[in-house]
Amino acid sequence: FERSLRPSYMLSPRTRGSGGIDRKLARLALHRFFLTRRAWFLHGLTSDGPGSATSSYTEVLATASPSLIAELFDKYGGRTSIHLRGLAALAATLEDLVYDEMMTLLT
Image (cartoon, rainbow, N blue to C red; front, side, top):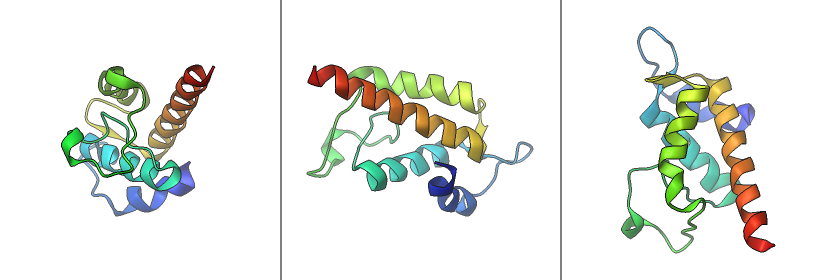
């Protein structure tokens, strides 16, 4: 996960003090990661509404995801920024949660 997220992370400006990237840029990096890796559009990673989605729009984790993603940001990062390792852990956790949700829906 770190290897895939590193280019976006390295190109993002760092926050003062912590050296990580802010939440908005981290959400954008995760959004791009999941669109590229899995063709997933996860609510809570962008501020865009359903009207801006493309034909490949996929809603995963339903309405719980924005608050869940905020909670996971707090766990793996901080209130204002996140480092690459935390961003990778967040991506792995989200991918695992989505996979579990999809398996539940299929059974």
